[in-house]
Amino acid sequence: MADHRDLAKVMDLFHFEEHSPGMIFWHPQGWQLFRRIEDYMRQIYQADGFEEVRSPVALSRSLWERSKHWEKFRDGMFVVGGVDPKDDHAFSGPDYALKPMSCPAHLAIFQSRKRSYREMPMRLMEFGICHRNELSGTLSGCMRLRQFVQDDAHIFCREVDILPEISQFLKRVQRVYTAFGYDQFSLQISLRPQRRLGSDDIWDRAEKLLIEAVQALGHSYKLAPNEGAFYGPKLEISLQDQLGRSWQCGTFQVDFNLPQLFEPLFVNPAGELERPVMLHQAVLGSLERWIGILLEHHRGNLPVWLAPTQVAVASISDKSANWANVIFQRIQQQGMRVELCRRDRTISKKIRELSQRRIPLIAIVGEQEAMNQTVNLRCLGEADPQAMTLIQLEDTLASLSTVNPIS
Image (cartoon, rainbow, N blue to C red; front, side, top):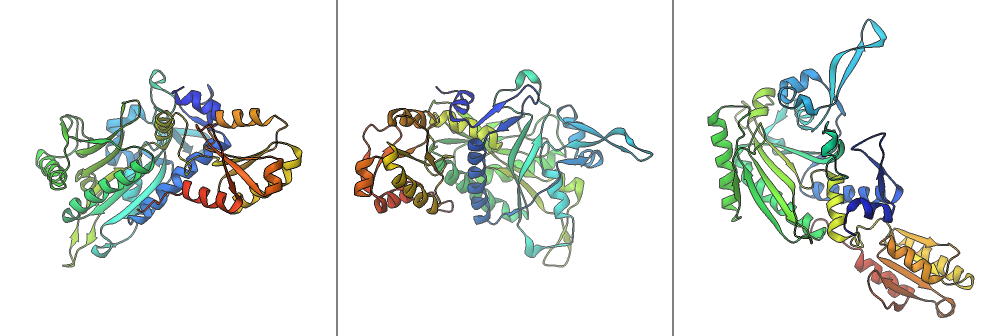
């Protein structure tokens, strides 16, 4: 079984409804997985100097017009009316749009007060709730949605900062992808599209900076004409899964054009006003799509540090239930995500059900284990459990569940 929708059903993670096409109904286990990924990425971004923000889901039409998104992406945006000032129960024309990305909102945060060169580079990130009005025929589980959350980050900096920021981004990508079990990824530099903002001189400059930065870092890459964002060229990162498929996830874009439209300024060391470069970046892209790719890559057998439930404690009979409860409480105090399997089933049925749910570790407790104050630990996919003391179990769980987000 490889399809993420089938895996989600077996693992009780999420489902889809006709009432909200292209949007996910998260179940407790699925939301636990989502939050674990979000928390991990929050640590990654904070370690690299990003500050987390939150911006509104709906932004005014005037802001989208100023950023030129209204002109370029109006058909792909969910547009809503405002309240008629003359009648609270009536709506006026299309005054707002649900944001498909967070760029204009982060520009607004930068411009909310006077900035100094001492704040540069200014790194903002958001788990932004985005909406895109995709055609119904293109919707495909988690892989293409109308509502999703993006690790949407923007860096305001000077040109001299571009190379180190790209270097940090590529290190961040490698660190994150490795933690999730991917060891192969490739780079593509997407160049100016036919419909774009700005002059050829600006695009020449942005493309040259991006290409030279990647070359200076020693990475191989492909060039893709006409595939850049409408405001700047972009570096695209594609990973390869265990099925040999390529998935474009991470992006990094060099943008001189939106800063020209919005005029974000900071005071430089000479006391003069200077316009920053805006760097757009995401490591995962859509978190929902990332989860779909991840489930299929691992066939649901997620790493212990990531699994919604890391350990299940299953007692063989009522005579071992008290000791099983002691083990459950000790594991819970250790900070692990653990559940106590209380169902009145044979131990073989319990193990089968827990394995079908892809719970990576099962602590099996019988009368002999209760008498000896031990436990048998079974790892998903392995036939023979390993007998150990409670202290040995705690040490084993600690080692299996560790992922160092800043290593």
